[in-house]
Length: 487
Image 1 (cartoon, one colour):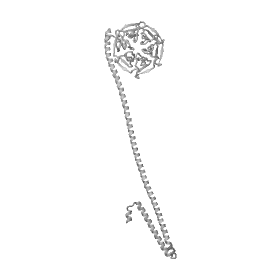
Image 2: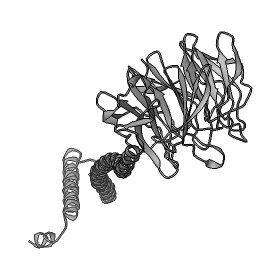
Image 3: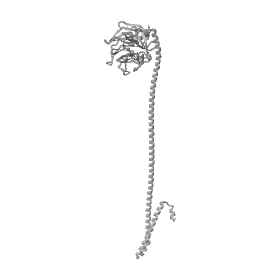
Image 4: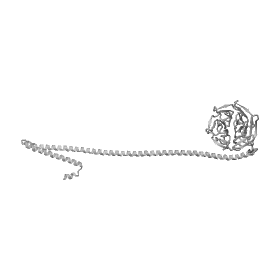
């Protein structure tokens, strides 16, 4: 009971050691019994040796007991060492298990952290992709918005330009009404008889377009009948126009380029006698004035001219089939304030100003060769002159030589290929208009020296020379264009 009460307070390890000691003690008791049994057995079998045994017994007993004790101690040491080894192994197992658990726990924690980081990284990458997509979409929207704004700006600029043109047209129209009324009154006062009562010959009609009368730039459009000194008013152009070129094609009158005294035009207007209306047609590629115009092979040509900055050698051609002006073969020289006409399927360009000098030179364009060829030069350099065809000869009339207005006239015969002097006009003039009707040349208006506007008309007929006619119907007029109707 005492052992039991004591052992109840021991640990499992102490109990294990106690049990081993108990077993050893039982072994010790067993060994003692075996010794005693041997002693008894030896005494019964050998009585003769009793004295010897008796004399040796105390000594042997002590020796055996000592040996047994040593044996027990050895076993106890072995048991103790074995137990220590078992405890060490158990501790190693426990420590190993704990370490494994710790390692597994650490691995699990690291794996969880890695998975969490991966999830966060995936989330972060997804968010970045979403932000990038949103930015790209916003940039596309901004680009679209910018393009729309640019388109709106272009449309607004076009509307503004159209509005400015409309305002200018209204201003010109008001001026036109005033000038037209003034012109009608002026014509009615100066005409000998009312136009309605006159028998007018349409074959001698000369169309006069635009110009300057000393006070105003004109949009007026008249038909002049020189034999009766009568002008008939028609629908004026849509804007004032001077320094323009004029040409006739298919019964319609083309007025090309020019200006208003402050600005040069690239616009072109067409007059239809059937409707008595002007319409705009495709504009020139360049704004220009003091150019020349002619019709050839169903096309309208515009030659040279200038814009106040430079002089041009370029030639533009209006192809009615294409419906626009295109550049064609340029002239050999730059020519501003030149004169040009068509004769026998070729175009002749004469004189003008090249930016440095007034020119004597002349050249011919043959559409079959599609090239310009230099022809004989005139004797006098001249620009701002007139050029007409009479009896298949060219007549270069008047103009400006760089110093003075000239009265000289030169005649070119293509069959001879040379120029000859003709009868001079009575009044030296430039910037006049000239046309041929019924075998006579008419030179109308123009400028004399000192910007004196001419109010006379000169008429030339072969064999009769030049005759001056004071025109009450036309009055003062320069920088105008003239075209005679072709029969």
